[in-house]
Length: 300
Image (cartoon, rainbow, N blue to C red; front, side, top):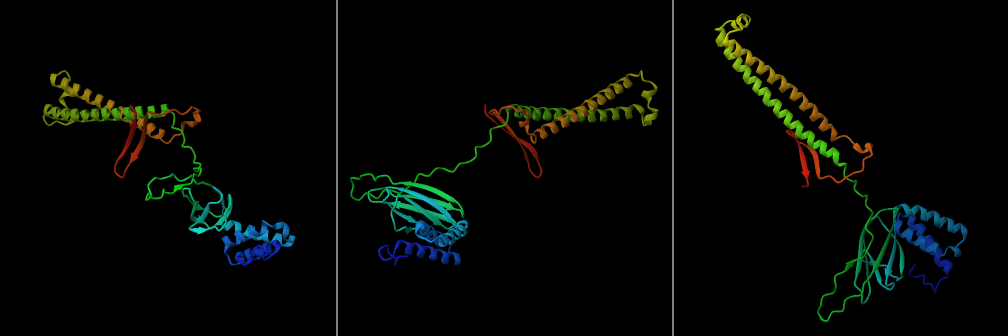
């Protein structure tokens, strides 16, 4: 291609030469070179026979899935452009380049301008657009001033999906309340059960002392309930039964509230159609191999 200078061959011969070279490179699986030469040949498709045009277009379609396509615009247009450290060898305002998949570095430099560069990862069968603007270099009065550091070219940042809005505030408030009520209820129920066990121990000791070793079926209190000692035993028994009953009830209620609170963490309330609001308090369950708890974050 370098030997076939525009002055030594006709436009048609040069286009045919580039096309045949691209087809050979495609057969050798040199997809980037093939895509470049096929595109160069098809730029002069009017000078090519129709049959050759179809062959070149088919080859271009075969090479496209294996290369990335880069549309590069540079200002000023006479800037020198390097891709991965290699000069393109021509100057233009816009370039159409074919790259192999992977990481690439594009640089542009011109006299009196600051150097610009752009690094990106190319994916096969993907098109990219990069615009590189070379600002004028600042005039320095010092002779030995170091050259200005190259600035990256401005490229539009990739679009990222917006994070979902926070959930409605009332589920978090109910979860906090559920955690507090569960903790208080289970604690109170546990204390009442401990008190009931203590009262049961006192009741057994006093009853054994009063019976003098008699069996429960022959307890003197059940035979003479009007004795003062028996009245004390009956009072202890009633207190024990009350503490045990209330304690069991509170443990059951606390367990139910705790289960409902835990289930709310896995429930989506979006079906209610309420608009999301900014939460001031956020709670999330935390579990390890030996412990289970809740992490609460808030803004006060």
